Length: 465
Image (cartoon, rainbow, N blue to C red):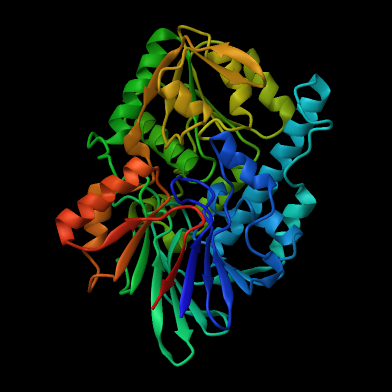
């Protein structure tokens, strides 16, 4: 008998945590932070609903913070087993967790110095020391389907998911006592079929049960090439001699934006504007993207062979220090500021937003999913003002969105991926989506395939077998 419990990304898009239990082992798949709504964020500060010390292993689908951001807390509370992920994910994870810890420490310090805290003193969720404690537990797995023994009676194989560098579908094969093995496939975040830089998702391996993300389960992305939409927004900013702020995830999305801007400059479709990447981790992440050739698509590899720099624009500056970030505020005129975080839940993008949101000439452009309760979602939904650092900031700037730049598949792309299954899973559990998106995807699956699918809920435990 195998038990599966949903302790995150169930009824919401953040906080991914799925617990597998057999008679012989307990394995956690993903260990992410909750973001967005206050009641979700408060879960980050509570003890997990399972004993971290009793876990035998952890499996990680990819290095976005809503899939890895709770690992330092898990280790601090007693987890000491191996953490399996791809080599690229391990490299990105090291950078991402240190950056997350640094930002939390900086924000706690800022709030304490400016009296912007209801807790005295404000504390970070975890420190850089806590983050470093995770690194000794990392174990590399190949992204080609070669299985590893994660725990007693539990094997895992990793398959390219095409979401960001290193992202994987994970097939877990659990052996029961006096029972045939069960195959449970975790989709992770499913990527697009035609995005630049990295290879598209691998076909899904046969499985008995499937956990499928449903972020865009109710939507179809604009089929207009995202490069065309990005060109229109950049030209709009250039014509107005105005700043363009792009809140962007530092892993994956920032690299794709830079790739497209460089292409548009090469093609003469946009003027060469100052591009400012304000994220301490952006340079390190870009280097990892350039060096990990095993997942690069053919076009990107060809550019590297020709000694081109695919992820560099003609007038680009990366702001690493706080001082460099502050100096960006002194610039005037048309420029592109790419800053983390992608949903405006924290980080340096908030300091730029405080100046750009009230400017009627300025533009803010969203290029990724905005979870409920986040500052980005509120702006996208038409809020006239938003709270940043306990200050109400008016939103007078122009608001734009390029949803087709998302690294998540839409529902048609998810259905196309599902059609690669050799046989129907017994049940598909829909995760990592807001309720309306998950329910819409359930209906699409039923209509297209006639398969059984159900929406997972937080705290739900199901017996598989």
